[in-house]
Amino acid sequence: MLRLISSFALFFAMSGFVSAQNQTVSGALSQSGVSAGDSVTLTVTYQPTDSDLTTGLGLRVHFDSSKLFAGDVANLLPTGLAGDAQFQDDSSDLDNDSSTDKFLNTGWFDSGGSWPNGVDLPVTLYSLPFTAQSGFTATTINFSKSSNAAGYSFVAESVVVAESLSVAITSAPSINSDNNNDSYSVSGTCNRAGTAVFVLMTNGASSDSAGTPTSCFDGVWAQNRLDAGELNEGVITVTAFAELGSEQATASLEVSKDVSGPVITAPASIIVAATDASGTLTSVDAITAYLAAATGLDNVDSDLVITSNAGSVFPLGATTVVFSATDSAGNLGASSSIVTVTDQA
Image (tube, rainbow, N blue to C red; front, side, top):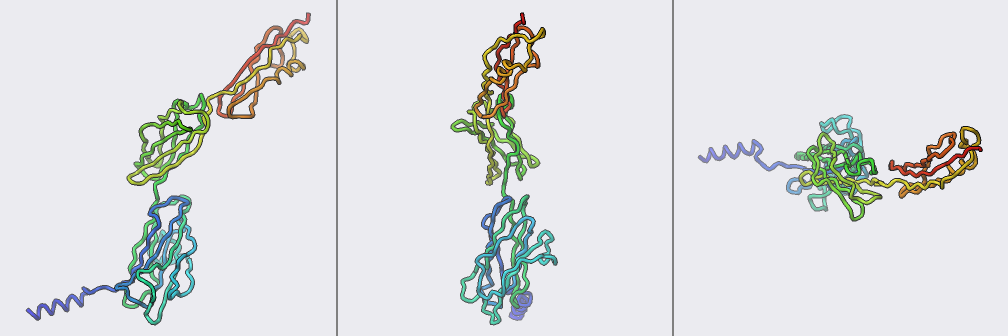
């Protein structure tokens, strides 16, 4: 029996059932998900087995530069630092991941095997800030070694930078009397299928919503059951609230509500004498002055273009002249008066 126990002990020792010696590198993100334009910082820490001191470590951090723009390294551990941290092209695919194309190369060395002496373990090696590029989607940051201590294995797990929930409003037209005042439609995009999107329209103390959310499908959403009729005129804030599980996102933009047409004031009616048997030309001074006398006022637009239905000739008798203008929201205002042309006799 003693011989059997001794044989098992020898087997476990020869088979590696002893504590492995590792140099472990870990990466932690300041936030798990980002969208285009957001910043995120990767903090890289080091922990050897039993907090051993070693001869050092050569470390590479790989990333996809089309998705992440790397900033300047911060908090770089000075103990045993061998040269400057350098960004390099990953042309040899050193992390066996074709999606990454750049890496940050750093190294620490102590010939006496005392690295990293004088610091508490685990220790922060450095912090590396990234900014998510335009069109960002989820990406992976990998670690690889250029060198490590003899008798130790290099251990590291990749870090996933997730794409955070996002929503955008792509269509929210201005509101006027003829354009969706009582049946308003808003649409947009999102980056997760099944996202619930709730739309709210506000103006001061007044607000309106569809009551129930719409769902994002194939990257787009639309809400067609909004009633802007109860909202005051002026600037309307349209806000989309997106929710999927515990994640939330918002987007907003401002549109104008203008349902009042311009107030047009026609000049007083006039009587003019005919210049010939057919009537009088519009170009005569009295009619020119009359047509130019129309005025207009709008609650939004300061510059209005007033036109009329006057022809080139006013015939004998009474002609109703309609003056009108359309504001930038498409609302029409009009007013009229009469030009009476009397016979030459």
